[in-house]
Length: 287
Ligand code: SAM
View 1 (cartoon, rainbow, N blue to C red):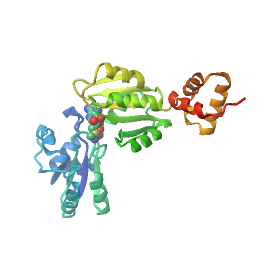
View 2: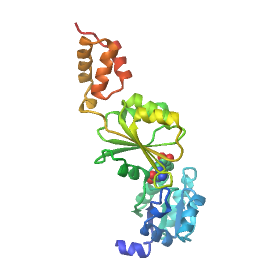
View 3: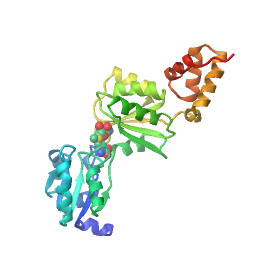
View 4: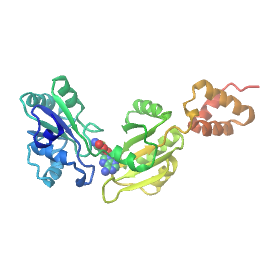
């Protein structure tokens, strides 16, 4: 189906994954409005939340709730309706569905059932933040919300530590102070930007480092929705293998006491000083 045809009427038996605004209702695309108007059914993360948007654009298509807690029952129901020839549009409360939002199981099931899946692209907080933060953007790692289970969280943070690209995180305002402190300790004190309330009245970008941003939010708690962007691992040395780091520690320990050696190696590698210091404690000192 051509894009022109898509703008006029939805193809039957198609699942449309439709992005909606992340705060500013004006950020709805023309195609998204048309698609939702033509949909046989709109699957909404929260029907009441979406009603504000739908009413704003005069969209009267029937809605049905689709979220983490009812997806087991809803996926087969929606797939059956798609197979019967209906066109279904999936939206979340804000931004692009599946991006830290429900929808993955439905999209997978649709492909498995041979149903056409089509994105109607638009806003996403991660990309909006990246586009205006002024940080490296040729490549990036979208980490979503960090896992809360300690083992999974450690694994995610250790994966992030040496990445040579900007890392983008979502975080809740009541957790941001602790998360910034934890990130500064584990990733080293990197340049970072905290983007707040994007596209809304109180939109703000705070530029600093993980440490200065942690101090800022500790002094003055932030409210609203947040995206955190963290600069790539500081230097090539951050990617160095264990042997090279050991060699650097050996060299530093020849000249300096442990804490000064740890500080020097931490600066050179971009790795946390505490971690390097711990390694100096068990490091065989060279003559
Ligand atoms: N699907 C959405 C997207 O495409 O960005 C993300 C949904 S996720 C459940 C919600 C999180 O996205 C918020 O907690 C916040 O971290 C981020 N977010 C959403 N809207 C935002 C905004 N206007 N400004 C800053 N961050 C936002």
